[in-house]
Image (tube, rainbow, N blue to C red; front, side, top):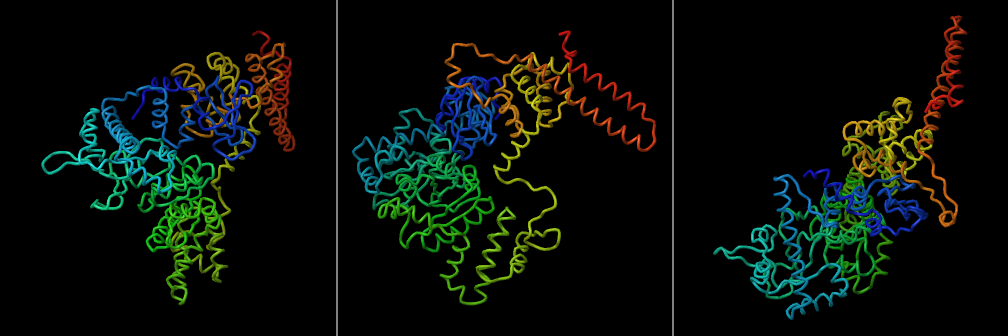
Length: 626
């Protein structure tokens, strides 16, 4: 769905970046800007800067930056359209699409609205009706406080065939939407009935906090259905792509760079209430690739919790390999026999559970333990099967260096030659380095940086190499495009810019200026898709060093740099560097032709001409007439 540009600008203008970011980052006023600890990397000294004036942010530690839409996309890990829609909701702005898109949007919003109404209805049943008291008592017996019940929006579906149907009809909800959302069903005679009846209700939220479905727990012995029933698949609820509790836990997962995976609703809520909040639940389904991808948006580590039954072990093994394929680091926590996270928390508390987490085992030890329990290590054939299974898991890892370290660990643990393990690994990866051996990381050819730290170091190094004059010119054309673009590029050419990234940005600005005229920098940063270029733009227009409070309170006037003077100085500096480079090149050529006995006169004249241009430039002749 394409949102009209004018609507995007309206939404961006209606939201203040400081207000939005303050909901997630503790900001303090410093000069004209606000600073805080960066939400995108670990730091102790604040380097994350937000400008209310420019409606932009930039981190001088990790180089992330952008406008308000960029922040929502990065922080919430959502698409551009989802970020814009979220900001529109905050500002109370209605987004209009094309007719086809509008129909699809209306259908989706109707389903969200139906689920939202159901969630409120079930919560009201729980907290305001006599029948709901038994369900409330059930939650209290599980150890859930009233605050936890409120935070997770827990509820109760009345033990009635049409209680929800009638209430929804009173509110004017469309019957077709209720059917499509899986909230009601149709009898053979064509009449409607409630899908959820007499059950404790667990609403399932999207990562942006919208109710998409429900899990319902059996409370009555005469209920003929299973212990848990769930919403069916709908256009807004796909079980394989949703993780229960992620909306509540994503900040904790991001902060700890680790998601703790449990199975059930009560397991997650008990852990969350006990202070272990970086927890998500698969809602009783096998862990899927889409769910692991969802986790990887917020952290790079996954801790799998399982009980000792065989089904739990097998599910953990499958989930482990899926996580490896998504480049997550995995550890496993084994619960005492007969326990699940909820029962363990209620008996022993959060501190004891944390001790279990601290003793988490590697996947190698976990797999080995499973094979030991089945007696596989009693025979050579069983040992071979166990080690082969471990190598198959290692083969799922994308990081070649990580695979090598794990192979070495297996070789040491089981006294097997590494070469044998690498041959087994080849069967599953098909990889061979260029010497024909396995295990040694490739050293020839460029290596792709895998960590954010590498990107940070690279961006800092690039910034140090970029001439100051070119950074100044970029800042000028970003902040004063109407005046500066024409003035600056009437004196220099784009090819005079030596930094390739700044040159790309300037080319974009010139092209944009020709097509649409000047634009606000917050618009421009939203139009640039390359993260590296976006970072350079935000770094250029955000000043890390602000005037101290003493300066702000002083009676004297503070001198602000004249952009025209900065532009002239930068142009002179760039031309001066260009001439000095040409003089040096000409000097080398002069030396070369002299040694070969070729006529040097053209090079001498060229040197004199370039030297005169340099002298004129130093004397200020370039701008004497302006």
